[in-house]
Length: 292
Ligand code: PDD
Image (cartoon, rainbow, N blue to C red; front, side, top):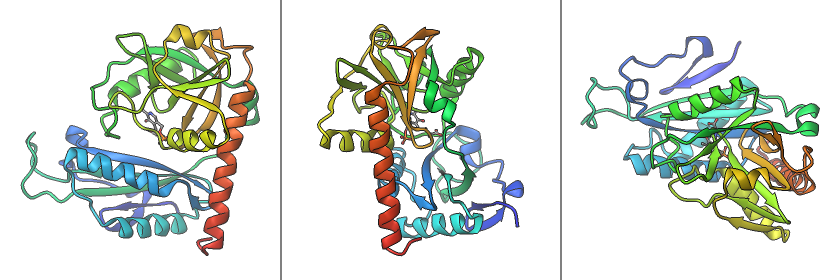
């Protein structure tokens, strides 16, 4: 049996998983999503991811498609059926299927799609060399705190970065601040201080960002949530990105110029380890709770 997807109450072969042409996600990007990492068959930071899903749904006045406990059961069932050990679970909720009309439909029931994807850990080469960044203008709307399906500016920025032979785009706003990456949060380290954009409507409040701030704060690392410019990033000692699929990845060049020594820095590697230790603790806790 091949990989399955969950589509509105049914587990269907991935290749045949489909939604209606009048799903509002398809026509208006009228929906939200989450990407939850899975390591050793355990959902990492599941509750904060579901909290953020709830926030996104509430902000857009979309109803939960199923209750939160039922969603948790479906996530586990799909992981089990797909034998997912390491990768991500993608879940998407749209306002549902209704005749095309911008205003909210009176009747539609929100629609839920869940898929899984295997992902290998980052290669030795990526961890040894770090990744390259290309700066791109931030042309998004002003509610980037909502994890909306509407990702066209992010798609364009990532494609431009790819064409510039970079791994990720850093988005620079009209004031010259680096807000975040196209699908990651952006960080720099300068003089022992770890800096990332403050959590507000200008960025997506990354769950990896949130966990790392909590974990690193406890170990005495000096953390500052403030905006920084591209020039500051270029003059930084270190830089890195965080996300549910990359965790903590060192950045060693921006627009073709070296960051610091042009090698992954010690603070970045320490933070990556702090994050991985936390993942290991969550796996251990799930095991003790009999989830694995
Ligand atoms: N991206 N900023 C943006 C714009 C993002 O899309 C993401 C996540 C992040 C990092 O958030 P988190 O740590 O919760 O993954 C920051 C996901 C992985 C994606 O779109 O695939």
